[in-house]
Length: 225
Length: 167
Image (tube, rainbow over all chains, first blue to last red):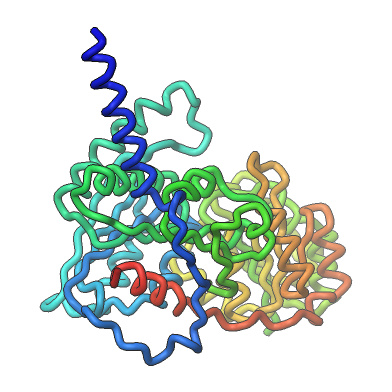
C-alpha cells in the first residue's frame, strides 16, 4: 500500500516538475515585443520545410487570420496544416484562395476538418461530449503531422489544438510553440478562449494596450490587421 | 451616383434591417443626397420591407440580396458603409477608407462588439450607433469628418513565428 502511494506521489511530483519546466506560463524567458524596424534584414538561419499549423474558425476569426497570414513568409513554412470546423465552408474557401496563389509543386498543405468543440449557445451539459469528439480528431491530426508551430486566434477549436500541442510537449515528443493572437474585437476583456490560451501560449499577442495591465505576459502589437 | 451599402454579415440583424427600411431613414438619406441604397440583409429577410411606393422612398433606389461572396466590391462602390459590429465587416470597411457607421447589436449575449465599436469611434475612425440612432447619425453628416484608418502591418506575426521556430 505504502509502496503504491509513494509511487503515485513520485509520479505526481515528476509530472508537476515536468509541467513547471515545460509550460510557457512558468517560463521566465523575457519576451520583447517585436520591433519591426529593428529586426528588418535579419537573416533567418534555417529556412527549411517547416510545417505551420493554422487554426481557422468561423466568421471574424477567419477574416483576421487571413490578414495575419499575409505577414507570414510562407516560403519558410512550405508545409501547412489547416484545422477547420467541419461545417465551416467559408474558411475552406479562404484556404482555397490562399493556396491557389502558392506553388503547389514545392509546397504542400493539408486540411483537417474537425467537429466543433462547442457551437455558439450549445448547452454546457453536452459540451464535454462534443469537446471529446473534437479532441480525438485533433489529436490524430497533430500526432500524424507534428507541426513546428501553431498559429491561432481564438475560435473554440484552437483551445483543443493547443491542449494537444501541450500534451505532445509534456510527453517530450516535440516542442510545438504556440502563437496566439487575441481578436481585434477584444479591447478590454479577453475571450474565454483567450483566458485559457493565456496559460498555454508561448507568445500571447493582444491588439489593444488596456489588456496588458491585466495580462502582463501578453505582448501588445497594435495595427496587425 | 451616391451609394449607401448596408451589410449585416453572415447572420442576420433584424433591428438594423428594419431601420434601413423606415421612412425616416430613407428621408435622411435623400436629404444627404444619396441616390441608391444597397442592403445585404442575411437571414433578416422577413423584416426587410422597404416602402412599395416611390414617393415613400424619397427617390432613393433600393437594391437588396441576402448574401454575397464579394462584399469588398460593394464596399468599394459605396460612398457610405453601414455595417454590423462584426470584426470582418469593420475591417473591410476601415481598410477601404470609406466613411463607416457601425451599428451595434445590443441583443448579442457576449457583447464585446460594443467594446470595439466604442474604441474605434473614440479614435475617430468610424461612427458607432444604435439601431435607433442610425437615422440621426446619417442626418448629422458626422461620417464625413472621420480620420482615415492607418494601414495594417501584419509583419510582426511573421517575425514572432520565425523567432519561435528558430529556437
